[in-house]
Image 1 (cartoon, rainbow, N blue to C red):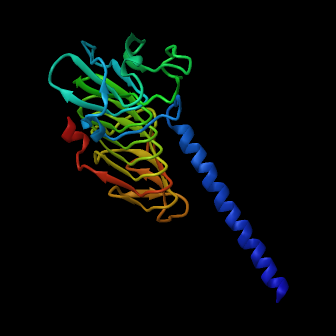
Image 2: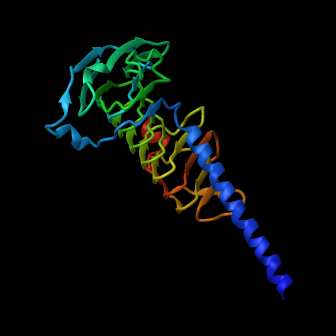
Image 3: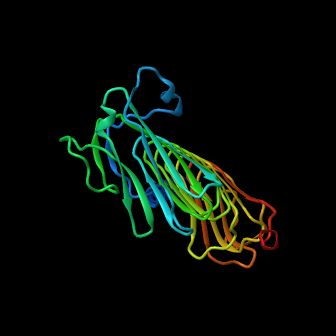
Length: 298
């Protein structure tokens, strides 16, 4: 009997180690899927309500407006602070930003406007440890700087958006273009008549897209948070949805492949097509149909 219990113990230990290994691998893949994150050392985090605090110093305000052709992209980049975007019936992009801090000097952070191959990038550049400004917007290094930059953005019809921050929520409402949204510490909420992708680490994702056809794969990923995605009823896609500690639910009929579990859903929506991947570790996944078909959109 002792041999039998010893064998079962070894099998149980091996199974536990396998589960832990899979969890660590999945966590690493999710974090890698998030944007190339600027390194932020000891950065302070604050909520939206902190902007109402009287003890925060306010820096110079920022304003930019300009016209982008349909199909071009407005890119917004921050480190500390939320990004709030809404669609507009006007023809110009409008970007306003507030800088506030308790300890650091808000005006040490500079907001630059850069022309890019795809359109325009607006970037909050933070000082390095030695006080000099970072040159590369995509790979910034900062130390013990609590300046928050809050973006308020209006985007016309047909203009695409890429909104990226590190410590802050991303909100995108009523856009008529494609959206890429990414943060690390914050939730993402977006709605657009186009397509979208969203990635975070600590926060939930709630997204609604109006376009059911896309060429490249779409991804919605987090680690600590739920995912709620609404799409048109006419979607044709190859679905991979996984949650380690939550359930996966879908309004769409799914032609499944492989073993079916409450934590994983792999199969085709409609006739199948481009990739649609949803993944989280701590949270559920809900996939909804808006009921709209291609004929409705036409």
